Amino acid sequence: MFRHTYASMLYEAGVDIKSAQRFLGHADIEMTLAVYTHLTKFKEDEAISSLNEHLEKMAAFGPIITEEQPKQKTKKRDDLER
Image 1: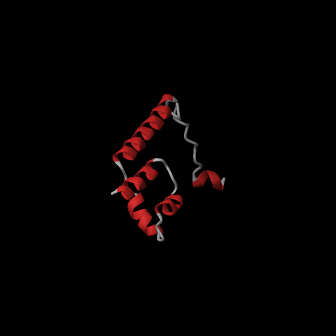
Image 2: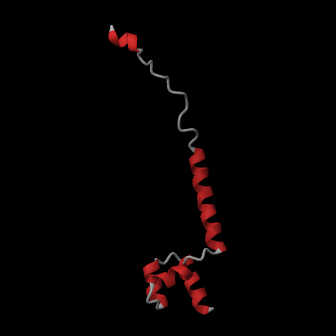
Image 3: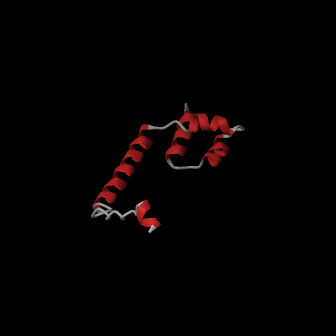
């Protein structure tokens, strides 16, 4: 129980997987990944919040294209032969 809690705390603190493997004493990275990648509610909420903040900043800039670009006139085959 304490090792899983410790692994979760490392994950939430943003500790990289290789360091977590060493700190947890796992010989195999697969063991660390199985425990360490468990997404906690805290991290999920944090990710959603981060995405929402980013989208709000993007919306503050307004539309990227303000008016429709004029279409280029394409030449017909007959025009090219003349």
